Amino acid sequence: MVKPSAVSRPCFLLVTAAALWALTLYLRLLALISVPVAFTGRVASFVPADDMTNASGAGGDPCRGRYVYVHDLPPRFNADIVRGCAAANDWWQGMCEDVRNAGLGRPLSGGALTGATGWYATHQFALDAIFHGRMRQYGCLTNDSSAAAAVFVPFYAGFEFARHIWGYDSAARDAASQDLVRWLVRRPEWRRAGGHDHFLVAGRTGWDFRRDDRNSTWGTSLFLLPAVKNMSFLVVETATMGWGNDLAVPYPTYFHPRTDSDVLSWQKRIRSSDRWWFMSFVGAARPSDPRSIRSQVMAQCGASPACRQLGCAFGSAQCHYPGDIMVLFQSSTFCLQPPGDSASRRSTFDAMVAGCIPVFFQPRSAYLQYRWHLPRDHATYSVFIPAEDVRSGNVSVEAELRKIPPAAIEKMRKEVIKLVPRLVYADPRYKLETVKDAFDVAVDGVLERMAETEESQTGSYWR
Image (cartoon, rainbow, N blue to C red; front, side, top):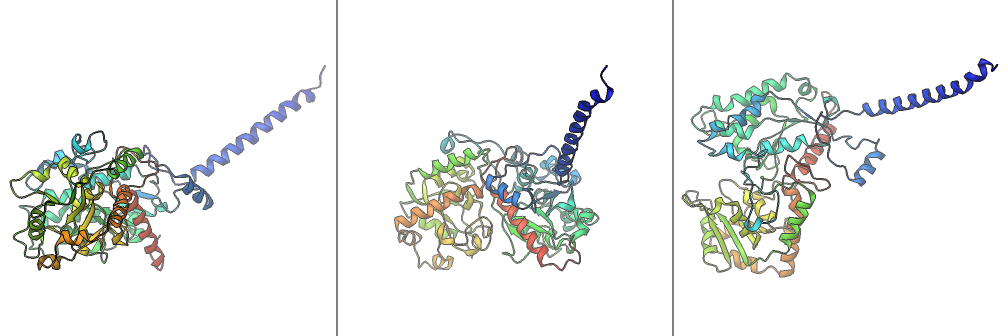
């Protein structure tokens, strides 16, 4: 008979080994779940190998210092505004059509866009929905607000503006903004830092949200409400040129790539485009604005066989077809960008996406804003001609551009084409892998701003 102890020894060894293996597995799982978790159902973006290496050296978490917490706002602040798009028809005709497809509008094809993917008739003020959609794809979202470096507020301020701009008094125009503020200041996330770590995207110009006169018939006072003075607001044109809490990001263009290859293929196409127009202009005159140089620019363009323009005067539909606009920009060397209703233009970004070198007449049109997205050395990608010189009639725009050597023109065009990825917003329903788009650049800028703000504070309220 075999002794019981002889039988139990190998069993004992097996049980001990299994217990040690289970303990090791448990400790590894515990380490994993200690990292703040991303929102359930969200897609994490790809982290390039070099970034992952750097992250591993900093503790193994590629999202360290990059987590964003998104407020779960009541639907009256976003989804209900989109559902009520028909209410904006007096000011934004066709808004319901323009905000479909995740805010991109109707798909485009044919003409200059034949064989290309990711093109839509996107409205210039559709950024509220597009940015929110991209945020859902952000790879470093967290449900733990205490771990977040920034807090995103998905209030569709631009869409709300369009619903109440005409026929309403200031109280009605400000109602949603004040409702939002009341909701925010009651949240523990807000009280932790007094709103310093909060940011919001209002996809219009900063002027539209800085109404300081209750009797004014234009805009809301969202940016001037005392409770939100510490927040950061992303707009398509800043009213304060870096001195306030509104910061400029690019207007949405017609191009919304789905993959890295969409971007690379488009860059290859515009790199080899035949540019038979030396310069071009898309827009309408501003006869009622004595400060505008549009009429002089258009007159000079019309007098030159080397210039082509698409008119946007009342009753003309020339400039309302995105395909025609992109054909012209894609076949032009220089695209003239005189200010219109405000200093900046959506046309600037459409032109650059087509590989066309922008010509500015005011520093405010680009140089004093878009600091995250455009090079600080403005001469590397653009030309500047002072508006006063054009207004006085002392300068020929074409003559000034003819002075630029061909080699310098080619160098500028290469820089413009290189900038394309950071000037477009990827399709929110997809995600790019290694290419950073305008959204990525904006979030990087916000996080850097938040880090600088935190470092400058005394710690009396932050975290």
